[in-house]
Length: 301
Image (cartoon, rainbow, N blue to C red; front, side):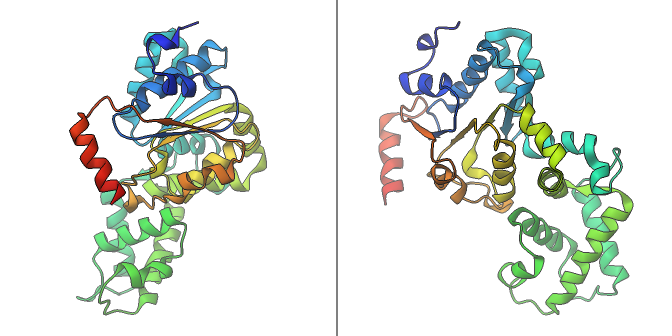
């Protein structure tokens, strides 16, 4: 077994070597949260948790690769079987296996941003709504994405997101409804659909849900403060059997508001998981004391 005290400070070690149960790690930038996650993966593998029973969720696939590469240096090839990547990547992986249960082929097409905008433009033209005042396809795409990530009807966002609207809001709803129908008819999912449909798959199909609940005995989430309601719900459902969630985040920041990030996910974690331990990483290894003093004063103000 690795002597973690040689590589981690006491708080990092407490998080990396924690036993079973929910764990909230509050970690500001520069306090070694990535190091802690790497050693958490290594610790679980050393404890003979099957690597395929570990789910590591990050906000970039590159971050997941780098963490696993570092964990590989500690415990070897076993980490190659860890499920890892962004929420969208993991949802895509599950959907490729189970898409027919949602009415899609296994070989569904993922529409990139340009594809999505073109399809929205086609819907606008089909509905004969292309007046000069009608929102551009880029604006509509952004609005539809925000609605998906916030789990809200499009009509709930129109007035707050589109200033000085000069068209009937229900025409925008009509475009959205047609866009959703066309995607399904064409066997297409856009980037947001990966998350929406991944959650639907787990919520609506008990056999699939139970399969992944049994598989993922430990779920690790990086940048938890940037999760939206869909992502937090997905984690809660997958962890419902064993409750082994390690959520790592900074409760002072939430940078992905455009993805529907909801700070309540991290603030309410102890309420949703009453048995959660809380570990705070407070030793900053990146900034000099003078910078930290200014930053802390800004936060306090």
